Every structure is written in structure tokens, then in C-alpha cells.
Amino acid sequence: MFSFLRQRPVPPSVTHVDLDGVRTAVAVRVSKRSRSFRLSLPSTGPLLSVPEGARWSDAEAFLDRHRHWLAARLPRTAQGQVLAEGIDLPLRGVPHRVVASGQLRGRVQPGADDDGPILLVPGSPEHLPRRLYDWLKAEALADLQARSAVHAARLGVTVRQVRMRSQSSRWGSCSSTGNINYNWRLILAPPHVLDYVAAHEVAHLLEMNHSPAFWAEVERTLPDMAKGRAWLKAHGRALMAWQAPGEGA
Image (spheres, rainbow, N blue to C red):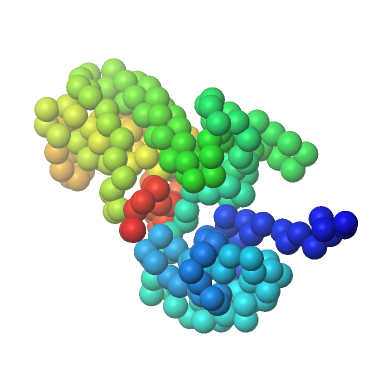
């Protein structure tokens, strides 16, 4: 009787901690073998390991006590942002909260609730990151194929194939045969940023370099190219921190 009163809340898959004024995501993993809380820094980002059955309030207190340790080490560590339920994901530059739909089948669906834009993701918890990642790649591919075609028509060149990649330091690459690879993370940036990268890579079909002639071609197809270029310089590092499932494992 009244046993439900003693039930402990299930830890979230991701939590957040304030580090010197910066809201930082920390992935949470429940471990059957752990006997104590553990905070670590794998390449995918901060990870809090929680013993099975532990109280979430104790885990939060542990994380709070170690936030200075975390803040001191993050600048020297790859600060990965993981795809998980509960995170705020900047789809096309607009924050969307990731919500599990509770359905095993179906597609990711953008929507909204009382708190703002959301992404409803189907699948079991362990498959949610992969479902979300595959959908983001598909959205990125559709957007980048469309913008590449526009810039190719303006510049009089032919794009043979557009593919998505997960490069760790490049937004795109172009071959002389007309194949263009783009970074899937561009779907997380505002549309004018994705458009700038598309213009940049398509212009390489005319100039396989970064000479003044090349930049003139980029500006010819995208007169306000400086806007997207400046955004990437200011925010590109944070955008690159988003990790595909399994990266850095």
C-alpha cells in the first residue's frame, strides 16, 4: 500500500549545468555496475554515470559539486553535444526541444507545445538518437540539393551528386567531377548559412581554389555571402560540436 509514493524518478537522458554562465549539456547514463556517481569527459561531451536505483536528487547534487572541475577541463576537451531526448536542438537555427513521441514507428515530426517548437521523435529510447540523426541528414540533403541546384543554374555549372558527411572540421568539399559533400550539421544553422556553404562549394566547380576570382564567383551567385560567412566564423565551432550517434566512441 502507498508503494507508489516511494518510487524514484527516472534519471533523464541529458541534464544541464551552468558553467560560468554557459548552459552546458551533460549526458546521463544509468549503469548497473556502477557503485558511485562518476563524471567523465569522453570525446562526445560530459557524461554523468549514475548507479541503478540511485536518487536523481543525489546525482544532481554530485554534478553541482563537480561543476568547477568540469568547467576547468572543458576548454581542453572536445565539447560534444549529443542527440538525446530533452535537448534543445537548433533546427535551421531555431531551438526545438526533442521529445519522444512514445510511438515505435513513424517519422520525426516538427511541432509545438506551450513552451515552443518541438521535434517529436519515434522509436525506443536507445534508438531515438539514430532516428533523429537520420532525419536531420535527410532534411539537410533536401535543403542542400535545392540550394546547390539554384547556384549551379546561376553559375552555369552542373552538380553531379550531393552527399552528406560528418566531417569534423569541414563544412563541405567539391570535386572537379561535380560531386559535392556537405556536413550534415548545416541543417542546424540558419538557412542563410546553409545557402552560403552551398554557394561556396558550387563556385569551386569554376575555381578550385580560394583566389579573388573564386570569391567573385561566390558573390555573383550570392551577393550577401558575407552574412553567412561571418556567422560561421562566429558560431561554427559550437555547431561542429554536435555529434552523430557513435562518434568519438
